[in-house]
Image 1 (cartoon, rainbow, N blue to C red):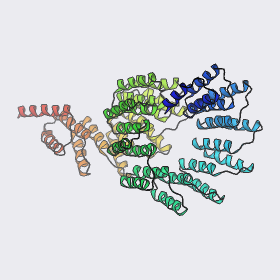
Image 2: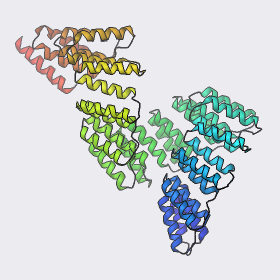
Image 3: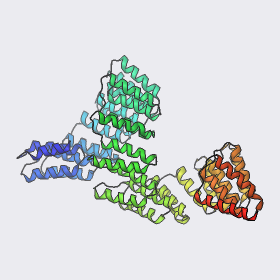
Image 4: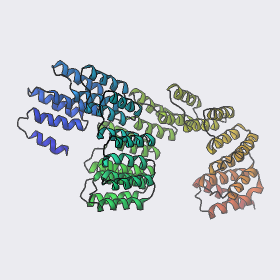
Length: 599
Protein backbone atom coordinates (compact mmCIF):
# COMPACT_ATOMS: atom_id res chain seq x y z
CA UNK A 1 0.00 0.00 0.00
CA UNK A 2 2.04 2.92 -1.31
CA UNK A 3 -0.22 5.51 0.40
CA UNK A 4 0.64 4.08 3.84
CA UNK A 5 4.34 3.87 3.00
CA UNK A 6 4.52 7.50 1.83
CA UNK A 7 2.45 8.71 4.79
CA UNK A 8 4.70 6.79 7.22
CA UNK A 9 7.76 8.47 5.70
CA UNK A 10 6.21 11.93 5.85
CA UNK A 11 5.57 11.73 9.61
CA UNK A 12 9.30 11.19 10.27
CA UNK A 13 10.66 14.48 11.61
CA UNK A 14 14.20 14.19 10.23
CA UNK A 15 14.65 11.21 7.93
CA UNK A 16 18.15 9.76 7.79
CA UNK A 17 20.01 8.09 4.92
CA UNK A 18 18.60 4.64 5.63
CA UNK A 19 14.99 5.88 5.59
CA UNK A 20 15.50 7.81 2.35
CA UNK A 21 17.12 4.69 0.94
CA UNK A 22 14.14 2.52 1.84
CA UNK A 23 11.74 4.90 0.07
CA UNK A 24 13.92 5.18 -3.05
CA UNK A 25 14.16 1.37 -3.11
CA UNK A 26 10.37 1.07 -2.83
CA UNK A 27 9.85 3.40 -5.80
CA UNK A 28 12.60 1.58 -7.73
CA UNK A 29 10.89 -1.80 -7.36
CA UNK A 30 7.74 -0.23 -8.84
CA UNK A 31 9.64 1.44 -11.67
CA UNK A 32 8.61 4.93 -10.53
CA UNK A 33 11.74 6.85 -11.59
CA UNK A 34 10.10 10.26 -11.06
CA UNK A 35 9.23 9.63 -7.40
CA UNK A 36 12.58 7.90 -6.83
CA UNK A 37 14.53 10.87 -8.22
CA UNK A 38 12.37 13.37 -6.26
CA UNK A 39 13.11 11.49 -3.01
CA UNK A 40 16.81 11.33 -3.89
CA UNK A 41 16.95 15.10 -4.50
CA UNK A 42 15.01 15.80 -1.28
CA UNK A 43 17.66 13.78 0.57
CA UNK A 44 20.48 15.82 -1.00
CA UNK A 45 18.63 19.04 -0.19
CA UNK A 46 18.75 17.88 3.46
CA UNK A 47 22.57 17.75 3.13
CA UNK A 48 22.65 13.96 3.32
CA UNK A 49 25.37 12.53 1.10
CA UNK A 50 24.19 9.56 -1.05
CA UNK A 51 26.08 6.28 -0.86
CA UNK A 52 26.54 3.43 -3.32
CA UNK A 53 23.41 1.64 -2.09
CA UNK A 54 20.99 4.53 -2.67
CA UNK A 55 22.56 5.23 -6.07
CA UNK A 56 22.04 1.54 -6.92
CA UNK A 57 18.33 1.84 -6.04
CA UNK A 58 18.00 5.00 -8.14
CA UNK A 59 19.63 3.28 -11.13
CA UNK A 60 17.29 0.33 -10.64
CA UNK A 61 14.30 2.73 -10.77
CA UNK A 62 15.42 4.09 -14.15
CA UNK A 63 16.13 0.58 -15.45
CA UNK A 64 12.70 -0.68 -14.35
CA UNK A 65 11.10 2.31 -16.12
CA UNK A 66 13.06 1.33 -19.30
CA UNK A 67 14.89 4.69 -19.20
CA UNK A 68 18.38 3.34 -19.79
CA UNK A 69 19.73 6.74 -20.79
CA UNK A 70 18.74 8.02 -17.33
CA UNK A 71 20.20 4.91 -15.67
CA UNK A 72 23.56 5.39 -17.39
CA UNK A 73 23.52 9.11 -16.48
CA UNK A 74 23.20 8.03 -12.83
CA UNK A 75 26.36 5.91 -13.14
CA UNK A 76 28.23 8.92 -14.50
CA UNK A 77 26.91 10.98 -11.59
CA UNK A 78 28.17 8.30 -9.16
CA UNK A 79 31.64 8.33 -10.67
CA UNK A 80 31.77 12.15 -10.53
CA UNK A 81 31.09 11.86 -6.79
CA UNK A 82 33.97 9.41 -6.40
CA UNK A 83 31.67 6.43 -5.83
CA UNK A 84 32.75 3.29 -7.69
CA UNK A 85 30.24 1.12 -9.53
CA UNK A 86 29.62 -2.16 -7.77
CA UNK A 87 28.25 -5.52 -8.87
CA UNK A 88 24.64 -4.54 -8.11
CA UNK A 89 24.88 -1.45 -10.34
CA UNK A 90 26.17 -3.51 -13.26
CA UNK A 91 23.37 -6.04 -12.67
CA UNK A 92 20.72 -3.32 -12.94
CA UNK A 93 22.21 -1.85 -16.13
CA UNK A 94 22.71 -5.26 -17.79
CA UNK A 95 19.19 -6.41 -16.86
CA UNK A 96 17.66 -3.13 -17.99
CA UNK A 97 19.24 -3.23 -21.43
CA UNK A 98 18.49 -6.92 -21.97
CA UNK A 99 14.86 -6.53 -20.88
CA UNK A 100 14.53 -3.65 -23.34
CA UNK A 101 15.81 -5.95 -26.08
CA UNK A 102 19.10 -4.06 -26.50
CA UNK A 103 21.35 -7.12 -26.32
CA UNK A 104 24.34 -5.26 -27.78
CA UNK A 105 24.31 -2.71 -24.94
CA UNK A 106 23.79 -5.45 -22.33
CA UNK A 107 26.83 -7.33 -23.67
CA UNK A 108 28.85 -4.07 -23.69
CA UNK A 109 28.15 -3.51 -19.98
CA UNK A 110 28.88 -7.16 -19.20
CA UNK A 111 32.29 -6.81 -20.88
CA UNK A 112 32.78 -3.47 -19.09
CA UNK A 113 32.09 -5.23 -15.80
CA UNK A 114 34.84 -7.76 -16.52
CA UNK A 115 37.19 -5.00 -17.74
CA UNK A 116 36.93 -3.43 -14.27
CA UNK A 117 38.68 -6.58 -13.03
CA UNK A 118 35.49 -7.58 -11.27
CA UNK A 119 34.93 -11.33 -11.28
CA UNK A 120 31.44 -12.33 -12.46
CA UNK A 121 29.71 -14.16 -9.67
CA UNK A 122 26.37 -15.86 -9.36
CA UNK A 123 24.49 -12.57 -9.05
CA UNK A 124 25.83 -11.10 -12.30
CA UNK A 125 25.46 -14.31 -14.28
CA UNK A 126 21.98 -14.91 -12.88
CA UNK A 127 21.05 -11.31 -13.69
CA UNK A 128 22.16 -11.36 -17.32
CA UNK A 129 20.78 -14.87 -17.93
CA UNK A 130 17.42 -13.90 -16.43
CA UNK A 131 17.30 -10.75 -18.52
CA UNK A 132 18.06 -12.60 -21.75
CA UNK A 133 15.48 -15.24 -20.86
CA UNK A 134 12.87 -12.51 -20.36
CA UNK A 135 13.77 -11.11 -23.78
CA UNK A 136 13.45 -14.60 -25.31
CA UNK A 137 17.08 -14.53 -26.48
CA UNK A 138 17.85 -18.14 -25.61
CA UNK A 139 20.75 -18.51 -28.06
CA UNK A 140 22.70 -15.91 -26.08
CA UNK A 141 21.72 -17.68 -22.85
CA UNK A 142 23.24 -20.94 -24.11
CA UNK A 143 26.43 -19.12 -25.13
CA UNK A 144 26.68 -17.54 -21.65
CA UNK A 145 26.20 -20.89 -19.93
CA UNK A 146 29.02 -22.34 -22.04
CA UNK A 147 31.20 -19.36 -21.05
CA UNK A 148 30.37 -19.91 -17.38
CA UNK A 149 31.43 -23.55 -17.59
CA UNK A 150 34.72 -22.59 -19.30
CA UNK A 151 35.43 -20.19 -16.43
CA UNK A 152 34.69 -22.93 -13.91
CA UNK A 153 31.51 -21.37 -12.60
CA UNK A 154 28.94 -23.96 -11.56
CA UNK A 155 25.33 -22.92 -12.15
CA UNK A 156 22.98 -23.14 -9.18
CA UNK A 157 19.38 -24.29 -8.98
CA UNK A 158 18.03 -20.74 -9.37
CA UNK A 159 20.00 -20.24 -12.59
CA UNK A 160 18.84 -23.51 -14.11
CA UNK A 161 15.24 -22.75 -13.13
CA UNK A 162 15.52 -19.38 -14.88
CA UNK A 163 16.80 -21.09 -18.05
CA UNK A 164 14.03 -23.70 -17.88
CA UNK A 165 11.47 -20.91 -17.62
CA UNK A 166 13.00 -19.17 -20.64
CA UNK A 167 12.69 -22.26 -22.82
CA UNK A 168 9.16 -22.86 -21.49
CA UNK A 169 8.15 -19.31 -22.50
CA UNK A 170 9.25 -19.88 -26.11
CA UNK A 171 7.74 -23.42 -26.03
CA UNK A 172 10.99 -25.19 -26.92
CA UNK A 173 10.09 -28.57 -25.42
CA UNK A 174 13.28 -30.36 -26.49
CA UNK A 175 15.70 -27.90 -24.88
CA UNK A 176 13.51 -27.32 -21.85
CA UNK A 177 13.42 -31.03 -21.01
CA UNK A 178 17.14 -31.36 -21.85
CA UNK A 179 18.03 -28.71 -19.25
CA UNK A 180 15.66 -30.34 -16.76
CA UNK A 181 17.55 -33.65 -17.08
CA UNK A 182 20.87 -31.77 -16.95
CA UNK A 183 19.81 -30.13 -13.70
CA UNK A 184 19.09 -33.50 -12.12
CA UNK A 185 22.32 -34.99 -13.51
CA UNK A 186 24.23 -32.24 -11.64
CA UNK A 187 22.80 -33.60 -8.40
CA UNK A 188 20.36 -30.73 -7.93
CA UNK A 189 16.91 -31.56 -6.58
CA UNK A 190 14.05 -29.84 -8.47
CA UNK A 191 11.78 -27.67 -6.35
CA UNK A 192 8.16 -26.70 -6.97
CA UNK A 193 9.43 -23.64 -8.89
CA UNK A 194 11.57 -25.88 -11.13
CA UNK A 195 8.73 -28.31 -11.83
CA UNK A 196 6.50 -25.31 -12.42
CA UNK A 197 8.55 -24.39 -15.52
CA UNK A 198 7.82 -27.81 -17.06
CA UNK A 199 4.14 -27.50 -16.13
CA UNK A 200 4.09 -24.08 -17.84
CA UNK A 201 5.67 -25.61 -20.96
CA UNK A 202 2.90 -28.19 -21.32
CA UNK A 203 -0.06 -26.05 -20.26
CA UNK A 204 0.96 -23.32 -22.73
CA UNK A 205 0.97 -25.98 -25.47
CA UNK A 206 -2.43 -27.26 -24.30
CA UNK A 207 -0.93 -30.67 -23.46
CA UNK A 208 -2.72 -31.23 -20.17
CA UNK A 209 -1.93 -34.96 -20.07
CA UNK A 210 1.82 -34.27 -19.91
CA UNK A 211 1.27 -31.50 -17.38
CA UNK A 212 -0.54 -33.98 -15.11
CA UNK A 213 2.34 -36.46 -15.57
CA UNK A 214 4.66 -33.83 -14.05
CA UNK A 215 2.32 -33.53 -11.06
CA UNK A 216 2.58 -37.29 -10.57
CA UNK A 217 6.39 -37.09 -10.73
CA UNK A 218 6.32 -34.32 -8.12
CA UNK A 219 4.20 -36.48 -5.86
CA UNK A 220 6.68 -39.40 -6.20
CA UNK A 221 9.54 -37.13 -5.12
CA UNK A 222 7.60 -35.60 -2.24
CA UNK A 223 7.38 -32.13 -3.81
CA UNK A 224 4.04 -30.42 -3.22
CA UNK A 225 2.58 -28.16 -5.95
CA UNK A 226 2.54 -24.47 -5.10
CA UNK A 227 -0.18 -21.96 -5.91
CA UNK A 228 1.29 -21.03 -9.28
CA UNK A 229 1.37 -24.65 -10.46
CA UNK A 230 -2.30 -25.04 -9.57
CA UNK A 231 -2.98 -21.74 -11.32
CA UNK A 232 -1.23 -22.86 -14.52
CA UNK A 233 -3.19 -26.13 -14.57
CA UNK A 234 -6.44 -24.19 -14.06
CA UNK A 235 -5.49 -21.75 -16.80
CA UNK A 236 -4.70 -24.61 -19.19
CA UNK A 237 -8.07 -26.26 -18.64
CA UNK A 238 -9.99 -22.97 -18.83
CA UNK A 239 -8.31 -21.95 -22.10
CA UNK A 240 -9.24 -25.35 -23.49
CA UNK A 241 -12.87 -24.79 -22.48
CA UNK A 242 -12.89 -27.48 -19.77
CA UNK A 243 -14.27 -25.35 -16.94
CA UNK A 244 -15.36 -28.37 -14.91
CA UNK A 245 -11.77 -29.61 -14.73
CA UNK A 246 -10.54 -26.06 -13.95
CA UNK A 247 -12.83 -25.84 -10.91
CA UNK A 248 -11.81 -29.36 -9.84
CA UNK A 249 -8.18 -28.17 -9.72
CA UNK A 250 -9.36 -25.16 -7.70
CA UNK A 251 -11.00 -27.50 -5.20
CA UNK A 252 -7.85 -29.66 -5.03
CA UNK A 253 -5.77 -26.57 -4.25
CA UNK A 254 -8.09 -25.50 -1.43
CA UNK A 255 -8.13 -29.10 -0.11
CA UNK A 256 -4.32 -29.02 -0.07
CA UNK A 257 -4.55 -26.10 2.38
CA UNK A 258 -3.54 -23.42 -0.09
CA UNK A 259 -5.63 -20.28 0.15
CA UNK A 260 -6.17 -18.58 -3.24
CA UNK A 261 -4.74 -15.08 -3.39
CA UNK A 262 -5.64 -12.28 -5.81
CA UNK A 263 -2.98 -13.45 -8.30
CA UNK A 264 -4.63 -16.87 -8.55
CA UNK A 265 -8.09 -15.34 -8.82
CA UNK A 266 -6.85 -13.04 -11.59
CA UNK A 267 -5.56 -15.98 -13.63
CA UNK A 268 -8.98 -17.60 -13.41
CA UNK A 269 -10.79 -14.35 -14.29
CA UNK A 270 -8.49 -13.84 -17.29
CA UNK A 271 -9.00 -17.41 -18.52
CA UNK A 272 -12.80 -17.16 -18.37
CA UNK A 273 -12.81 -13.74 -20.06
CA UNK A 274 -10.52 -15.02 -22.82
CA UNK A 275 -12.92 -17.92 -23.39
CA UNK A 276 -15.87 -15.48 -23.56
CA UNK A 277 -17.47 -16.87 -20.39
CA UNK A 278 -18.27 -13.54 -18.77
CA UNK A 279 -20.82 -15.14 -16.43
CA UNK A 280 -18.08 -17.34 -14.94
CA UNK A 281 -15.66 -14.38 -14.72
CA UNK A 282 -18.22 -12.30 -12.81
CA UNK A 283 -18.82 -15.26 -10.52
CA UNK A 284 -15.10 -15.32 -9.66
CA UNK A 285 -15.22 -11.54 -9.05
CA UNK A 286 -18.04 -12.07 -6.53
CA UNK A 287 -15.92 -14.78 -4.88
CA UNK A 288 -12.98 -12.35 -4.61
CA UNK A 289 -15.12 -9.76 -2.86
CA UNK A 290 -16.79 -12.38 -0.64
CA UNK A 291 -13.32 -13.42 0.57
CA UNK A 292 -12.55 -9.78 1.43
CA UNK A 293 -9.85 -9.49 -1.22
CA UNK A 294 -9.47 -6.32 -3.25
CA UNK A 295 -9.75 -6.73 -7.03
CA UNK A 296 -6.71 -5.28 -8.79
CA UNK A 297 -6.37 -3.34 -12.03
CA UNK A 298 -5.57 -6.70 -13.70
CA UNK A 299 -8.89 -8.15 -12.47
CA UNK A 300 -10.95 -5.34 -13.95
CA UNK A 301 -8.88 -5.05 -17.14
CA UNK A 302 -9.49 -8.74 -17.95
CA UNK A 303 -13.25 -8.23 -17.50
CA UNK A 304 -13.18 -4.99 -19.51
CA UNK A 305 -11.28 -6.75 -22.33
CA UNK A 306 -13.72 -9.67 -22.23
CA UNK A 307 -16.67 -7.33 -22.82
CA UNK A 308 -14.77 -5.52 -25.60
CA UNK A 309 -14.02 -8.78 -27.42
CA UNK A 310 -17.68 -9.78 -27.00
CA UNK A 311 -18.79 -6.51 -28.61
CA UNK A 312 -20.49 -5.15 -25.47
CA UNK A 313 -18.90 -1.70 -25.31
CA UNK A 314 -21.50 -0.36 -22.85
CA UNK A 315 -20.58 -2.99 -20.25
CA UNK A 316 -16.90 -2.30 -20.92
CA UNK A 317 -17.42 1.40 -20.17
CA UNK A 318 -19.23 0.50 -16.94
CA UNK A 319 -16.25 -1.64 -15.85
CA UNK A 320 -13.89 1.23 -16.73
CA UNK A 321 -15.90 3.57 -14.48
CA UNK A 322 -15.78 0.92 -11.75
CA UNK A 323 -11.96 0.88 -11.99
CA UNK A 324 -11.84 4.59 -11.24
CA UNK A 325 -14.49 4.33 -8.50
CA UNK A 326 -12.36 1.66 -6.80
CA UNK A 327 -9.51 4.18 -6.60
CA UNK A 328 -7.38 2.31 -9.12
CA UNK A 329 -5.41 4.06 -11.86
CA UNK A 330 -6.13 2.68 -15.35
CA UNK A 331 -2.92 1.96 -17.25
CA UNK A 332 -2.17 1.82 -20.95
CA UNK A 333 -3.47 -1.78 -21.23
CA UNK A 334 -6.90 -0.80 -19.87
CA UNK A 335 -7.10 2.29 -22.08
CA UNK A 336 -5.98 0.34 -25.16
CA UNK A 337 -8.69 -2.27 -24.64
CA UNK A 338 -11.33 0.44 -24.39
CA UNK A 339 -9.93 2.32 -27.41
CA UNK A 340 -10.14 -0.90 -29.42
CA UNK A 341 -13.75 -1.45 -28.32
CA UNK A 342 -14.83 2.10 -29.15
CA UNK A 343 -13.10 1.86 -32.55
CA UNK A 344 -14.86 -1.45 -33.33
CA UNK A 345 -18.18 0.13 -32.32
CA UNK A 346 -17.36 3.04 -34.68
CA UNK A 347 -17.59 5.51 -31.81
CA UNK A 348 -14.57 7.44 -33.06
CA UNK A 349 -15.38 10.72 -31.34
CA UNK A 350 -15.56 8.89 -27.99
CA UNK A 351 -12.30 7.11 -28.86
CA UNK A 352 -10.63 10.47 -29.56
CA UNK A 353 -11.85 11.83 -26.22
CA UNK A 354 -10.57 8.69 -24.48
CA UNK A 355 -7.12 9.27 -26.01
CA UNK A 356 -7.19 12.83 -24.66
CA UNK A 357 -8.16 11.48 -21.22
CA UNK A 358 -5.17 9.13 -21.33
CA UNK A 359 -2.80 12.02 -21.99
CA UNK A 360 -4.45 14.22 -19.34
CA UNK A 361 -3.98 11.44 -16.75
CA UNK A 362 -0.31 11.00 -17.60
CA UNK A 363 -0.76 7.64 -19.35
CA UNK A 364 1.51 7.58 -22.40
CA UNK A 365 -0.18 6.01 -25.48
CA UNK A 366 1.85 3.30 -27.21
CA UNK A 367 1.76 1.78 -30.69
CA UNK A 368 -1.29 -0.35 -29.78
CA UNK A 369 -3.20 2.81 -28.77
CA UNK A 370 -2.65 4.52 -32.11
CA UNK A 371 -3.15 1.29 -34.09
CA UNK A 372 -6.59 0.86 -32.49
CA UNK A 373 -7.57 4.36 -33.61
CA UNK A 374 -6.09 3.81 -37.07
CA UNK A 375 -8.21 0.64 -37.41
CA UNK A 376 -11.28 2.58 -36.25
CA UNK A 377 -10.81 5.30 -38.85
CA UNK A 378 -10.18 2.56 -41.43
CA UNK A 379 -13.59 1.02 -40.65
CA UNK A 380 -15.16 4.46 -41.00
CA UNK A 381 -13.37 4.98 -44.33
CA UNK A 382 -11.71 8.15 -43.03
CA UNK A 383 -8.31 7.74 -44.66
CA UNK A 384 -6.99 11.19 -43.68
CA UNK A 385 -7.55 10.65 -39.95
CA UNK A 386 -6.07 7.14 -40.26
CA UNK A 387 -2.93 8.69 -41.77
CA UNK A 388 -2.97 11.28 -38.97
CA UNK A 389 -2.77 8.54 -36.32
CA UNK A 390 -0.05 6.77 -38.27
CA UNK A 391 2.02 9.96 -38.47
CA UNK A 392 1.68 10.44 -34.70
CA UNK A 393 3.21 6.99 -34.22
CA UNK A 394 6.14 7.98 -36.41
CA UNK A 395 6.57 11.34 -34.68
CA UNK A 396 6.72 9.65 -31.27
CA UNK A 397 9.27 7.08 -32.54
CA UNK A 398 7.02 4.15 -31.74
CA UNK A 399 7.67 0.73 -33.25
CA UNK A 400 5.36 0.41 -36.27
CA UNK A 401 4.56 -3.23 -36.89
CA UNK A 402 2.66 -5.11 -39.58
CA UNK A 403 -0.62 -4.68 -37.64
CA UNK A 404 -0.33 -0.87 -37.76
CA UNK A 405 0.57 -0.90 -41.45
CA UNK A 406 -2.33 -3.29 -42.09
CA UNK A 407 -4.78 -0.88 -40.45
CA UNK A 408 -3.54 1.99 -42.64
CA UNK A 409 -3.71 -0.23 -45.74
CA UNK A 410 -7.31 -1.11 -44.90
CA UNK A 411 -8.22 2.58 -44.61
CA UNK A 412 -6.80 3.28 -48.08
CA UNK A 413 -8.45 0.28 -49.73
CA UNK A 414 -11.84 0.86 -48.13
CA UNK A 415 -11.88 4.50 -49.25
CA UNK A 416 -10.79 3.52 -52.77
CA UNK A 417 -7.46 5.36 -52.51
CA UNK A 418 -5.57 2.57 -54.26
CA UNK A 419 -2.57 4.67 -55.27
CA UNK A 420 -1.94 5.46 -51.59
CA UNK A 421 -2.65 1.81 -50.74
CA UNK A 422 0.04 0.72 -53.21
CA UNK A 423 2.49 3.14 -51.56
CA UNK A 424 1.70 1.76 -48.07
CA UNK A 425 2.02 -1.80 -49.41
CA UNK A 426 5.52 -0.95 -50.67
CA UNK A 427 6.42 0.83 -47.42
CA UNK A 428 5.81 -2.44 -45.56
CA UNK A 429 8.55 -4.11 -47.62
CA UNK A 430 10.83 -1.06 -47.34
CA UNK A 431 10.47 -1.17 -43.54
CA UNK A 432 11.88 -4.72 -43.56
CA UNK A 433 8.54 -6.27 -42.59
CA UNK A 434 7.05 -9.36 -44.20
CA UNK A 435 3.58 -9.20 -45.70
CA UNK A 436 1.06 -11.52 -44.08
CA UNK A 437 -2.18 -13.00 -45.36
CA UNK A 438 -4.15 -10.03 -44.02
CA UNK A 439 -2.17 -7.38 -45.91
CA UNK A 440 -2.33 -9.40 -49.12
CA UNK A 441 -6.09 -10.02 -48.81
CA UNK A 442 -6.75 -6.36 -47.94
CA UNK A 443 -4.87 -5.22 -51.04
CA UNK A 444 -6.54 -7.88 -53.18
CA UNK A 445 -10.00 -6.76 -52.08
CA UNK A 446 -9.04 -3.14 -52.80
CA UNK A 447 -8.09 -3.93 -56.41
CA UNK A 448 -11.23 -6.08 -56.71
CA UNK A 449 -13.47 -3.16 -55.67
CA UNK A 450 -11.88 -1.12 -58.43
CA UNK A 451 -12.31 -3.88 -61.00
CA UNK A 452 -8.54 -4.03 -61.57
CA UNK A 453 -8.48 -7.65 -62.72
CA UNK A 454 -4.86 -7.76 -63.95
CA UNK A 455 -3.55 -6.27 -60.69
CA UNK A 456 -5.67 -8.68 -58.66
CA UNK A 457 -4.27 -11.59 -60.70
CA UNK A 458 -0.69 -10.34 -60.22
CA UNK A 459 -1.26 -10.17 -56.46
CA UNK A 460 -2.55 -13.78 -56.37
CA UNK A 461 0.56 -14.89 -58.24
CA UNK A 462 2.76 -12.93 -55.81
CA UNK A 463 1.04 -14.60 -52.85
CA UNK A 464 1.76 -18.05 -54.27
CA UNK A 465 5.35 -17.04 -55.04
CA UNK A 466 5.82 -16.15 -51.34
CA UNK A 467 4.36 -19.45 -50.14
CA UNK A 468 0.80 -18.40 -49.29
CA UNK A 469 -1.99 -20.90 -49.88
CA UNK A 470 -4.87 -19.36 -51.85
CA UNK A 471 -8.06 -19.95 -49.88
CA UNK A 472 -11.76 -19.19 -50.33
CA UNK A 473 -11.30 -15.57 -49.19
CA UNK A 474 -8.68 -14.93 -51.89
CA UNK A 475 -10.74 -16.47 -54.68
CA UNK A 476 -13.91 -14.68 -53.54
CA UNK A 477 -12.14 -11.32 -53.85
CA UNK A 478 -10.81 -12.35 -57.26
CA UNK A 479 -14.36 -13.24 -58.39
CA UNK A 480 -15.43 -9.75 -57.32
CA UNK A 481 -12.63 -8.31 -59.51
CA UNK A 482 -13.85 -10.44 -62.43
CA UNK A 483 -17.42 -9.13 -62.16
CA UNK A 484 -16.31 -5.50 -61.70
CA UNK A 485 -14.15 -5.78 -64.83
CA UNK A 486 -17.00 -7.44 -66.77
CA UNK A 487 -15.18 -10.75 -67.30
CA UNK A 488 -17.86 -13.33 -66.43
CA UNK A 489 -15.98 -16.14 -68.22
CA UNK A 490 -13.16 -15.76 -65.68
CA UNK A 491 -15.77 -16.15 -62.91
CA UNK A 492 -16.74 -19.58 -64.24
CA UNK A 493 -13.08 -20.60 -64.57
CA UNK A 494 -12.30 -19.45 -61.01
CA UNK A 495 -15.19 -21.48 -59.59
CA UNK A 496 -13.86 -24.52 -61.47
CA UNK A 497 -10.43 -23.99 -59.86
CA UNK A 498 -12.06 -23.76 -56.42
CA UNK A 499 -13.94 -27.03 -57.00
CA UNK A 500 -10.74 -28.68 -58.23
CA UNK A 501 -8.92 -27.59 -55.07
CA UNK A 502 -11.93 -28.71 -52.99
CA UNK A 503 -12.32 -25.25 -51.47
CA UNK A 504 -15.56 -24.37 -49.71
CA UNK A 505 -17.91 -21.96 -51.47
CA UNK A 506 -19.17 -20.07 -48.41
CA UNK A 507 -21.90 -17.49 -47.79
CA UNK A 508 -19.60 -14.63 -48.72
CA UNK A 509 -18.70 -16.29 -52.03
CA UNK A 510 -22.36 -16.91 -52.89
CA UNK A 511 -23.24 -13.31 -51.97
CA UNK A 512 -20.45 -12.06 -54.27
CA UNK A 513 -21.71 -14.32 -57.07
CA UNK A 514 -25.34 -13.24 -56.64
CA UNK A 515 -24.40 -9.56 -56.51
CA UNK A 516 -22.19 -9.96 -59.57
CA UNK A 517 -24.79 -11.74 -61.71
CA UNK A 518 -27.49 -9.27 -60.75
CA UNK A 519 -25.18 -6.35 -61.61
CA UNK A 520 -24.57 -8.10 -64.96
CA UNK A 521 -28.38 -8.16 -65.47
CA UNK A 522 -28.53 -11.96 -65.30
CA UNK A 523 -31.09 -12.73 -62.57
CA UNK A 524 -31.41 -16.37 -63.69
CA UNK A 525 -27.75 -17.01 -62.83
CA UNK A 526 -28.26 -15.22 -59.49
CA UNK A 527 -31.26 -17.42 -58.67
CA UNK A 528 -29.26 -20.50 -59.73
CA UNK A 529 -26.51 -19.52 -57.24
CA UNK A 530 -29.16 -19.12 -54.54
CA UNK A 531 -30.51 -22.62 -55.27
CA UNK A 532 -26.95 -24.03 -55.15
CA UNK A 533 -26.40 -22.35 -51.78
CA UNK A 534 -29.56 -23.98 -50.41
CA UNK A 535 -28.65 -27.37 -51.85
CA UNK A 536 -25.22 -27.20 -50.17
CA UNK A 537 -26.96 -26.84 -46.79
CA UNK A 538 -25.74 -23.28 -46.33
CA UNK A 539 -27.60 -21.26 -43.71
CA UNK A 540 -28.90 -18.05 -45.28
CA UNK A 541 -27.62 -14.85 -43.67
CA UNK A 542 -28.73 -11.21 -43.84
CA UNK A 543 -26.06 -10.13 -46.33
CA UNK A 544 -26.99 -12.78 -48.91
CA UNK A 545 -30.75 -12.28 -48.42
CA UNK A 546 -30.55 -8.47 -48.69
CA UNK A 547 -28.41 -8.69 -51.81
CA UNK A 548 -30.68 -11.23 -53.54
CA UNK A 549 -34.04 -9.59 -52.78
CA UNK A 550 -32.90 -6.04 -53.50
CA UNK A 551 -31.24 -7.07 -56.78
CA UNK A 552 -34.17 -9.16 -58.01
CA UNK A 553 -36.65 -6.36 -57.30
CA UNK A 554 -34.46 -3.97 -59.33
CA UNK A 555 -34.34 -6.47 -62.21
CA UNK A 556 -38.11 -7.05 -62.05
CA UNK A 557 -38.82 -3.70 -63.73
CA UNK A 558 -37.24 -5.14 -66.88
CA UNK A 559 -38.36 -8.75 -66.36
CA UNK A 560 -41.98 -9.25 -65.36
CA UNK A 561 -41.55 -13.04 -65.04
CA UNK A 562 -39.56 -12.62 -61.81
CA UNK A 563 -42.60 -11.74 -59.68
CA UNK A 564 -43.51 -15.23 -58.51
CA UNK A 565 -39.88 -16.14 -57.89
CA UNK A 566 -39.37 -13.01 -55.75
CA UNK A 567 -42.40 -13.86 -53.61
CA UNK A 568 -41.29 -17.49 -53.21
CA UNK A 569 -37.74 -16.52 -52.19
CA UNK A 570 -39.13 -13.87 -49.82
CA UNK A 571 -41.29 -16.50 -48.13
CA UNK A 572 -38.31 -18.88 -47.78
CA UNK A 573 -36.20 -16.15 -46.19
CA UNK A 574 -39.03 -15.25 -43.80
CA UNK A 575 -39.49 -18.92 -42.88
CA UNK A 576 -35.80 -19.13 -41.88
CA UNK A 577 -36.28 -15.98 -39.75
CA UNK A 578 -33.43 -14.14 -41.46
CA UNK A 579 -33.39 -10.44 -40.54
CA UNK A 580 -33.69 -8.26 -43.64
CA UNK A 581 -32.72 -4.57 -43.71
CA UNK A 582 -35.52 -2.02 -43.34
CA UNK A 583 -34.56 -0.46 -46.69
CA UNK A 584 -35.05 -3.83 -48.45
CA UNK A 585 -38.39 -4.35 -46.70
CA UNK A 586 -39.55 -0.90 -47.88
CA UNK A 587 -38.35 -1.66 -51.41
CA UNK A 588 -40.25 -4.97 -51.34
CA UNK A 589 -43.39 -3.23 -50.11
CA UNK A 590 -43.27 -0.68 -52.96
CA UNK A 591 -42.73 -3.49 -55.48
CA UNK A 592 -45.71 -5.51 -54.20
CA UNK A 593 -47.96 -2.41 -54.32
CA UNK A 594 -46.96 -1.69 -57.92
CA UNK A 595 -47.53 -5.32 -58.84
CA UNK A 596 -50.97 -5.29 -57.21
CA UNK A 597 -51.95 -2.15 -59.12
CA UNK A 598 -50.80 -3.63 -62.42
CA UNK A 599 -52.79 -6.82 -61.87
